[in-house]
Amino acid sequence: MEHPAPLDLLSPQVAKICGPRAPAQLKQMAASGLAPLGPVDLVTALYALSYEADEKLADTARQTLVKLPDAALHGALDQQLPAFVLDGIADGLLRREDVAQKILLSAELADETVVRLVEKLRSERLLEVVAANEQRMLRCPTIIEKLYFNRAARMSTVDRAVELAVRNDIELSGIPSFGEVKAALEGELVLEASEEPTPDDLMFMSVLSSEDLASLGEDLVDETLEAQALGEGSGSEAEEQVKSAQQSLAGLTVSQKIRVAMLGNGTQRAVLIRDSNKLVAMAVLRSPAIRDSEVIRYSQARSLPEEALRYISSKREWTKNYQVKVNLVKNPRTPIHDALRFLQHLRPHDVRGLERSRDVPQAIASAAKNLRQKRGR
Image 1: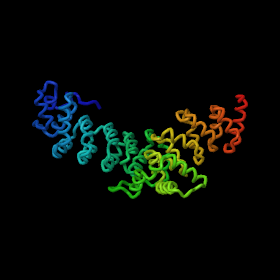
Image 2: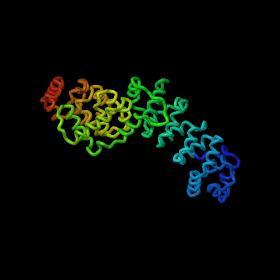
Image 3: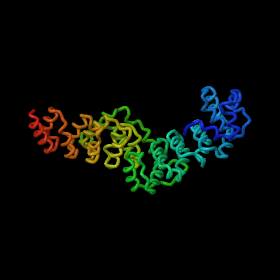
Image 4: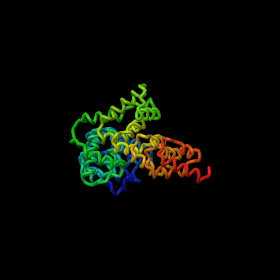
């Protein structure tokens, strides 16, 4: 919404105080909360003045608004403030949970305001209030998408919200891994709402906020995981840390792992990309947080399922990177037709290396030989 609202949407009394012809002294009194106004007009006036061109006056109005006594704010909210006022004052009042809750429960509150607020909320309690309004979420599914990516939202709350969308045939395109989430929920029990977080919620938040592997670095985590896959365990401290992280992640449900893949850090994704469930590996690749450096490492991982390597091969923004092409051709798990396609783009010394390699399928080695002969190098 654009602010401030036109004067013709304000009450005559507020318009008189906040209009361009209003005396500066009167505006200052209103901005300081000293004007003789009822709760609704007072809050509306402070809203309008907080968008004044005079930044000092606007700041005074904003400060007065956030410090208003509960009686004044609740009195105004009980009388249903218009949507534009609620939109304009909500951000500044998020830290006053009782007031913020009343705003979120207002029938006048616009869906677009809820979408914006859900991104900013860090209160589990307030996010529960948002998720309880199923009618609003069905009308505006973007709210569900914003809930999913808010780290403060309980996992059980997110599951219920997503399941609501699935049940009503709503496609949540704002969740890149929605297909995987949908498939995962089909085999899981979605819990009813509760006043307190469930043990599963607490475990999920503990894993999501974990920094167990941060000190190792993603490269060392990858090396350790690849060594594990090849049965080359060393008993090192790094290996023990990785095993501990694997165990904590293994305790999560598939839908929880997928959300960690979306919201977690690179070291968590390095573990999850190798999960035995393909839905989890695919969610890692769809994560909006994934970096090119991760894709380079994943493209050479022989523990990845063929479906994951096929997905990497299909992403032009990733395969523009020469090292990704080389890794995909060298990786024996890459679908042959994709490997052959990228082989055509490799440099002569890489083609020669593939021709002699025993680690690639014979079809790739033979194609590399034919390509070298064709190029005459």
